[in-house]
Length: 292
Image 1 (cartoon, one colour):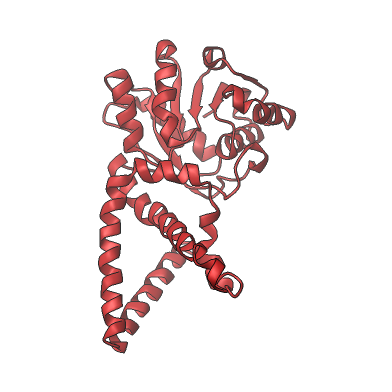
Image 2 (cartoon, helix red, strand yellow):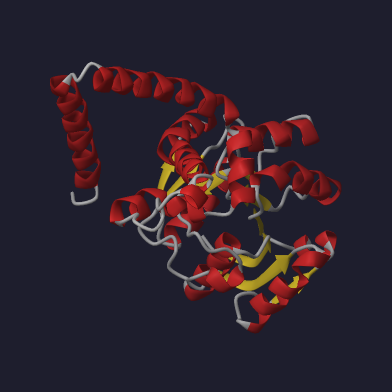
């Protein structure tokens, strides 16, 4: 699916990569970026790099005549963006987003519009990097990566088909699921790991003045904590947006840690071995999925 005029709200890593990939695949004749006054330098860079054709700091002007509007801003801003779009929302335009949580997007839409617009198709590309901004964007970020679409029962079939086709042409492997199920899955596979990495580095970082912890940290520490280099503002917003799923998972994790702590204290070598072996085999099953 291609769009004559594509508007991207938020031309950062994800928004910029969408623009680059859409241009590479010939999926849009004109790509317009939108941002706030404080985003001006980033928008100017995006135009200079050829990522977008033009930009506007006026939202009505940016979305005017657009066949598709992609909201590529942090999840905490989506309600505000929808409210700004509401006065000139067009039934002829397809709207989608790239937020890491989906129930919050649907809730925001319902609060702004009184219902979830049929032409709003929430989506989430499971791709990214620790870097941010348009300079970090690439045209192959989504190739071979999973993309989840979370339509509602009232979503337009035509709009859903268009969004699915667009992402498939960007190289994504598209799945469709319920928003709540999406949030539960991503809480376990992405949000909780980020939270744990941040928590561990925060805890150890506060001890660093009195120890050689970081000085002697090796590959295992680097691998486990790599995602703690991610944007703290973005991850604060994601965790808060998906707090119900995360809190439930944290309770499970605390129980698991308590069990391991008891096994250590009682020197239950067999139980520790079983836990580690099961985890190792489970991870191998995860890796095997990418080799099939």
